[in-house]
Length: 163
Length: 252
Image (cartoon, rainbow over all chains, first blue to last red; front, side, top):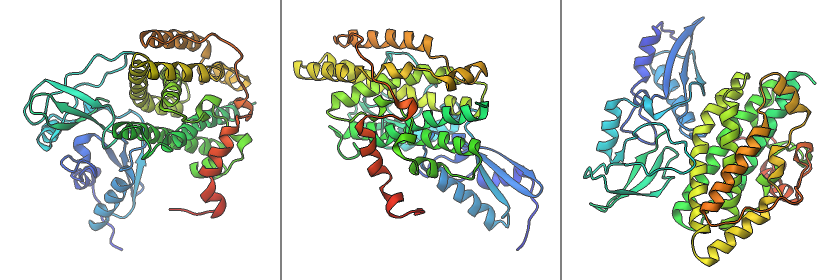
């Protein structure tokens, strides 16, 4: 077996472009899932955090990290899951939000929504930019999305939930 | 009782609420009243299973006997489960499902907001993660309570019946025993007395906005802290544990 010595930031760069399995236009770095890499006694520990507690993509992301690093000769890798600090959509980069919109998913606004009765949040249609949209369902095709429809262009679309 | 033992029991209790409700809601997969609700209720179920996994894994770590979260989830007898009685109540009609979600999610919102301040770092971290998900569960339950309560006479009556039927299981949410007392001294557990008052207040606000009547306090069921359950839990477990009983040690 070939062992390779890389700096943690080099390891980070190798895996930062892994696409999110459910929304492949954005990377795990864009999403804020990839939290960091550290090296101790020759073992690289990659820390990731789930978007939602039960995010089913965690296993796949973890496998991909090991696979990519393995193909670069880095085999002593551990992937660690952390809940703290809790993931928030505020970590999404501006670039990631633009990519989401282009993909047809309305990006999240801000992360607070904690009142007993919610005031309707204004979500812009990712296709025609209209602000005349209505919520169809708070829960969508994946844990991180809600379902909206545009009252102007009449298209239904996914919106990234504020979290 | 040591802090470690108490924390183990406390964590199992929280984990069991999430595990059993997750299973209960997953029964609605492909059986939701409409497609959007099918997605919503199973999304909530998924959040619950994620929370159960985190909590039961932590319980296994505390115990330190090399068990996994799956061992704890699937290999106990009914009397060793500590979920609240409200959690295990059947889905029945949609009104009952929503009334249960309303009572549970308003309670969890208040509870986990406090647990975020726990001196136990793992519980606090899980709380800060799960509270974001609970907000969605609560909004969903409140939306439907308003829609059904203030809907047709049929939906109103069904919702009122569901609220009345489940009321006797709500008192137990606020019970505290020696485990809570010990951990409150350690700054780990949540004091349920102020939460009870706030919960009553919030539920009253929601019900009245939904044109529903707040039930009067009658006899309150109890028992889950000692592992005494309604007949419903046994039925859930017989299905949930089937695979592990039929094929011990089966893995994915």
